[in-house]
View 1 (cartoon, protein in one colour):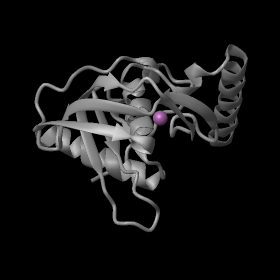
View 2: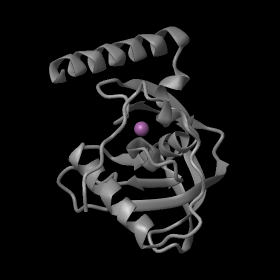
View 3: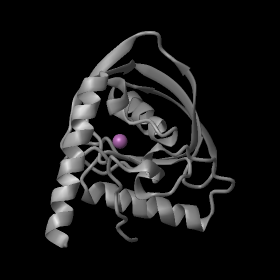
Length: 174
Ligand code: NI
């Protein structure tokens, strides 16, 4: 396994639409292993392949608590079949939008189908935090970030802040 670099906003690649995986083979499993390791190291609870620069419809998640047994979840080609009409609100952050958090409303339940780590078709009903995380990650596959749900002003302030942070880091390297 190897750590991959996580891209951060503003980066055009994060806005790309990811394409379906044709076959879940060893190469895809290797990528999922790397993504999981990268996510744990960050640390984060979810990561989409596009966040490590690969525009494929792959998500890894682990929403188990800090001192609990790890429960990695893998979703290839996830598709939302149905959503509840009622929403829930969580304060969301994103490894590609470091240090920024905002309250986001999303449907509180969703039914999704996907291929698992071995390429087997699966369906699950997700609710609570899992539902929010899956929807956040599926957004990544469409090139959508959680800051897109904020007001124009709030979003531009966050992007400005992140751009400045990037420049500051570059200055030190140069
Ligand atoms: Ni994210």
